[in-house]
Image 1: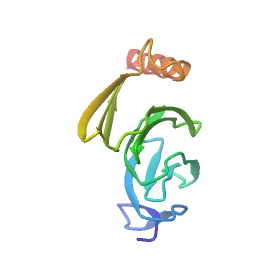
Image 2: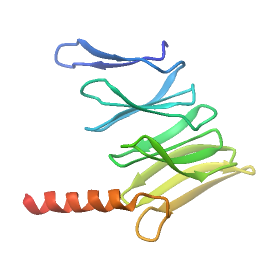
Image 3: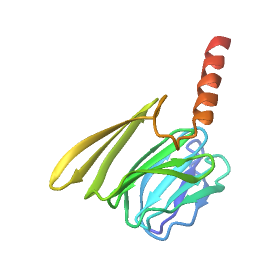
Image 4: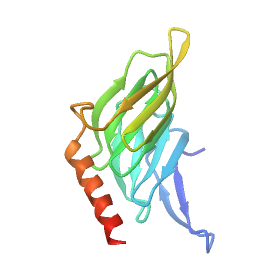
Length: 159
């Protein structure tokens, strides 16, 4: 457990990138065509280019181990250490703290405009749901969401 992430070519078995920077156990990974995201017990999330292995952003607002995250090409939601944070994945910036002062955040999932998180607070387990669509959090970068939706519509029409 050296804190690295390795990218392998499955055809040749060759290690093509060793991603360094985490200082402790990397416990969570997720990949999309645009981003490879790693989270570690060192309280950081790192966003990498999966093709080149270049480090794009280091997200560091957590104060303890990150227990869950999910991302797409616009946003990343991460939880752990009593907080749930919404990030701009393209810019690597914190958008909003969605939850604070809870015992723990155990799972987060989103699809389109909806986001749900399982958390503990005052000895109870709760599920919180957010709507990132119209009329939602004023700090959400709606222009990017609108851009992405229009782009998705155009690609569907072209097919």
